[in-house]
Length: 337
Image (cartoon, rainbow, N blue to C red; front, side):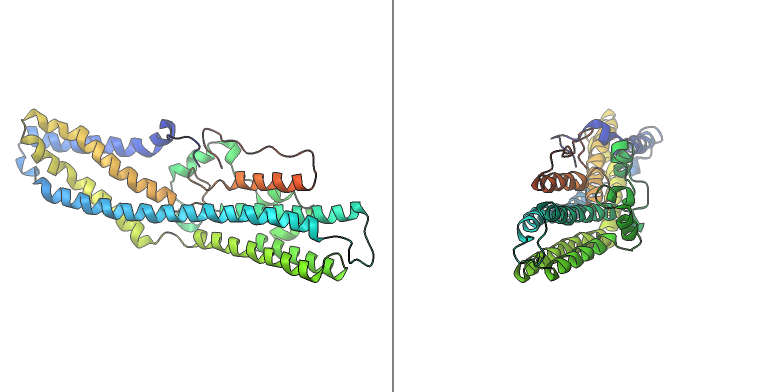
């Protein structure tokens, strides 16, 4: 996620330079053929070209709105995970006590239980984050948005076992990564821990139900993320948006020729800069929608899950009374991950 008001040129350039160069070359060849080869029939009326452009603009606008909806829904889901995580923290600390226990634990023993449950939760959201950033089959292609992140070593993905080792023991990590969905398994272990606490009297029946509801909420939010992750933006919309944009870009210079030729002979060469600008605008609109439709791909338009997980970690560890807290994730090159 960008943290600045304007996207820096260093980010725009990798997306733009190839297309801009091709637009300049393509329009220059057409103008050369028109001016020096005598191919006056290359000029066509601008009205049908403008009609195509209007239709394409509406279609691309629809695609971009739909892509933004997917991005914003993903951010709302992680906002809900943040709120539920804080609720989980205070519930664990206040619900798990010696009030109904037949064999009361010392304060240190209760504190260890609180820490275990909260650290298991931090491992859970970490597993969700890492799993969501695994690239699906349809994203395995040249992607400047992803490559811009890969060039920054701080943003490179660590393996799941390394990430989980910050919160779990070696045995727990090995057990988690053996499962096809480690995040789901970690929540299952949370539920088992709550059941054991209820059986031993450290958690009342009412509080047990309340905490189980929180686990169900986490499953719901994880499922919402997986829905966005596993179901790509419908290909019929994405493909034809791309096709229509490039069809318009292909025919545009022929319509501009006729308009420029009405002024004077040398004005024909103004087709090159005007065509390049218009074509770049339409191509950029297409790219913006294309790079926003999948918000969990570890790219520059990602939901900043790393920063969100770190904020949750700071809040929950602070609730535990820990003094040495990790620092908040800072933007690097104006990108927050």
